[in-house]
Length: 312
Image (cartoon, rainbow, N blue to C red; front, side, top):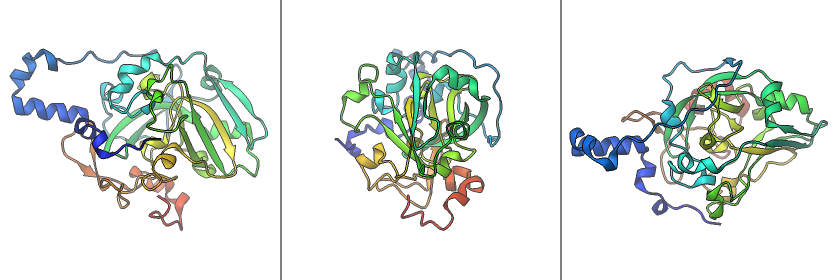
């Protein structure tokens, strides 16, 4: 197992890529950069098929959405590499059909769902959520999906189901980043059962009204907008209801840096950087980080009485 250290990550990946490039353009002069072939504007990402019957969802923010091009070309998805552009460049190798999701563990109705069945059994909603990553950058993304609570209701958890574990695809042939030891594969994440049942918790199958691009976690992923982005497991193949908290991928890799809850909290810094401020992709100046990423009114009751510095 290998833990990434500061020297392992290029500075151009710590600073949002478009900010980094804009600074270079400014310093060298707009005209000179416009004429340079090496810095020609990259081709826009391919657009996917539209999802039918999507209705507006609750809880959406009214903030300006991050452009589709940024959402789909600046990603953390270590299964395809540690660089922010790696997923967009390499995720074409991922085959999302056929695809099944096994739901098992402490439930009365275990079963294996085909992805196209999941697309049909619940009404799809568009929810515009903030996404905050632990490195300090953020986006506003119009996700399309359905509440995880809908799936939970159908499988009928037993009284022993205290947590939900999410296991993502492990296939180094399709996911070249898994050939490295940066993490122990497969990627595993987890939620407490009340977090999983919260109406904000989404199983996303699309964004911008379209089928979820491979680099964003196709064909199905988690979205919990009050937690740091790495909690939102991508390309899920198994959902397990368990009695004890799962040992998640990043807790296994660096337990002193990544806790189980991973709620956005400006008062609890990452050991290597502050979480008090963030930079929204597309903006040059930083802004104050909001408690629970701005969703405190909805989710703070989940953690009433907890020491959020201890349970980070």
